[in-house]
Every structure is written in C-alpha cells, then in structure tokens.
Length: 274
Image (cartoon, rainbow, N blue to C red; front, side, top):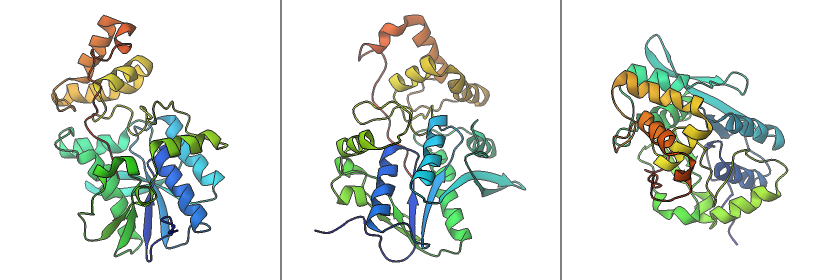
C-alpha cells in the first residue's frame, strides 16, 4: 500500500495554518519520514488576527513533536514589502501585518480582491523561500478528501502542489478523532468538524452567523475590523454588510437569533488557504 505521506524529492514546504487539519497533516508527515529533514521547512504565516489559542497551539506543535516551526509575518521596510521572522513571544497580536498591508494598498481587501491571503500568507512564504535560496519546491497543501473541489495545480512555476491528506482519503471525521485521542489540542471549539474561530478572527469569508457569534463572544476583537471599514468607507464583505451592522442586528434582536437558521446567513464565502 502506497504511503502518501512520504516526502517527495527536493525541497518541500509545509505550511501550517494553526488549525487542526494542517497540524494533523504535519504529524503524519513526521511519522512517515522519521522526522523532518533539512530540505523540508515547516512555516506558519501569522497575520496578527489569529486567536491567542491558535498561537499557543502552533507553539505547542513545535515543542511536542520536536519540529522547528518558522514563524513569518508580512512586513514593510523603507516603504518596501518584506517579511520578518518572529516567534510565539514576539508575534503580532493586534493585526499589525494586515494593517501594514492595508495602509500600503490604501484599500481594504474583499472577496473579489483577496490581497490579504496573497500578501500576508502566499507571498510572505514565497519571499522566505527565496531568501534561503530555494529556486523551486513542493508546496504541501492540507486539503482533505471531502473537499476535492479545492484540489488545484499551482499557478506559480516555482512550486508544485502536493495534497497528502486528499491522496490518503482523510476526512473531517478522521481529523476530529485524531485530536480526541491526542495529549494536546487546539483550545477552540469544534462543531461538525469545523472550528469557527480558526484563521483570522473576523475573516470576511466567514458567514454572517459566525461573525455575529464573534461579536457576541469577542467584541473587542471585532472592533478592529469595524474601525477599518469606517475609516476607509468600504466593507470587507461581498454583500455590502458592514461589521457594525452585524453587531447592531445582534444587539437589537438578542440571543434568540443564534437558535434559528434563517436570521443570519450561514453560508461562508469560501476558505482562506495558503
């Protein structure tokens, strides 16, 4: 039986998002290859809007599994885009990388112009790989078998994509069962295999329902998003709903709206991927 976690030849990049799926993928790769060789780099691109539990989880992954995780952040120096290497203690926690990107571009990203994913994650990681003199590499992507529609070839000639979870037939249920048996876990709630508070706390790709829950549970974190909308005079969301309007609707109606399925839209606008 083919082991689809065996590392391909050459340089290999493993990007983890700080969620359970990419962490599971990393564990299986470590196990199948008796560790991570020097030609393989494990990276985490921090946007500054991850929940504190996510940062703690990434730190614990490195310690528990004895693997070096390289923490990267989008940055600017002398008005030019660059990256910096940080760690758990020095990582941004108030959206500084994203805010630098937004102010340099003079517009806030949205579904049609997802500059945040491209700049804060994809290109930040690419800049790091170029800095260590990699000319080409394999990019490891944590897409499961139950989301085959997301399996796509790389658009960049510098790397090719590898989908070990998909190739091994891994589902949400497999990952959930793995973490139930683990001696540590991401300390964020999971519902039907989904962690609503993963990735950026107020990501505009999340449904209205999830954003309303964030307003209810973490209003201080959602203010960052609402304030930028008000400053730039545009909304993050494709449907034109401002973050402040979602908050106001929640406050007017009370908690009963979370019991129904038809008050706030529950459809996500996509997923943020590396």
